[in-house]
Length: 204
Length: 83
Image (cartoon, rainbow over all chains, first blue to last red; front, side):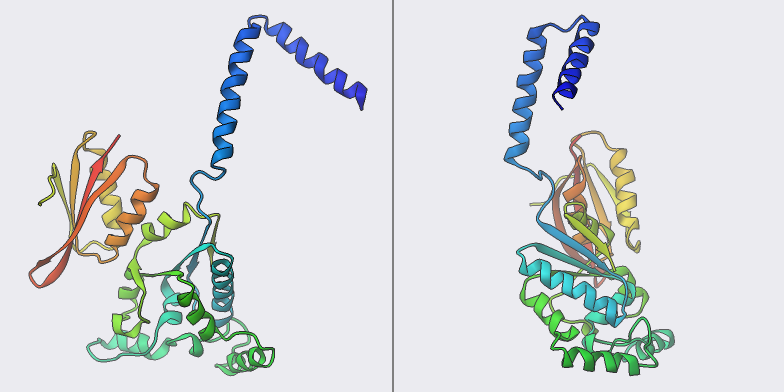
């Protein structure tokens, strides 16, 4: 071990000697600059990173939504800022009702076929036309796991930022009155503005 | 009260992310210190521009306002090129 250390020192000395042009004052100057920089960095360990987690909720599957909302509530409970961005099928989770009036044929079809609200979602696997989801809800109840609807409510109580992708909302023909209250409307930069400063960003 | 600007970009009818993409291009054509006024009908653009300036190095969001035009909301953004 000791030999190894001496070897390293020798190599370093050799390198400096070989360079020839570096004098002691230049080195001292460099060291003081580096020390100053280290002190600066220590003052603000994560300069641009906030204690924040950002999630894209793309999926409208019940199981994936549960994962997203457990992470969101968990992070919020840990004191982190949480930003959730709902896009495409993820919009189904934050619907509170279905509205048909004033919609065209395609929009009505989408409204009829897509689930509205956390309690009406299907599983990504073993759904069996909703039977699987019903069994899962029963299992969660038996194991005293918070239901998805409860988790959604909890994120709102914890002050999680919830943004809806306005472009996909329009595309899927979802009206404002179909969505839960207290949601923001935004786009890709709304998410990226949060995600770029987050310690973790997830796509679910 | 009215915010001063040097150029106007009309992105009415454009949907996310086009208002941003076109604004980015337009800002690159400005000289440093100039301000771009963006006219958008995309509701998401309000939060989008706020998100953008959080990460952008050379843009300042000077002001944002919502005005009525022909019965619809028009979102006006003022972006200044800072470097």
